[in-house]
Length: 212
Image (cartoon, rainbow, N blue to C red):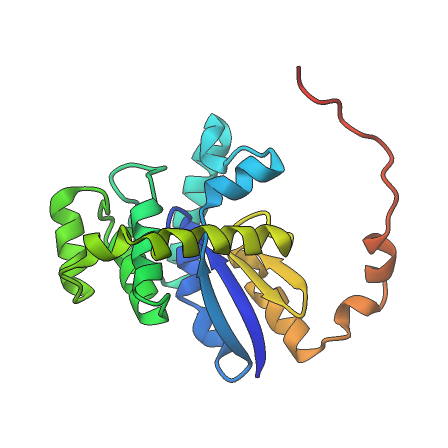
């Protein structure tokens, strides 16, 4: 099986949706989950998140709700969004970034619509994760450092959003790129044929001025 890095942040409902269909890669990919802070990617690339633009926020929330219903994935928005995902990300790292723990956290937030930053809810999540010492583990310097390292690794790989599957140096961004990644695995020469080589080196015709 090919190795693949899967970059995600619990703040992203699209990452949750993709987490629920990772089974499509069974027998095809050896996936290494890498929690990253989406805000750090946005900061690096000079982008706004979809929830930071009012009309895009409305569309995005509708779209993800529709996608969940279309794909039969249990889904409920948490009480507020965006929320601070850092503690949940550190929890995943502290628990070895295991898919079992990641699924539990994702389903708690997005399957049930729970708030991971509410003290009572956090205590319940820790109970489900069988980690009564979760706070202490999340605050360990090595956990904080590892999360930062994941972000640096993501940027070095060119990752600009979540979720992203990195396979053979190719980046597949978003829940809707799941099928694209599967097609690539079935035919690794796919992007070397037809129009793909031409569009890969298409010249830039105009450059937008930086806002002042």
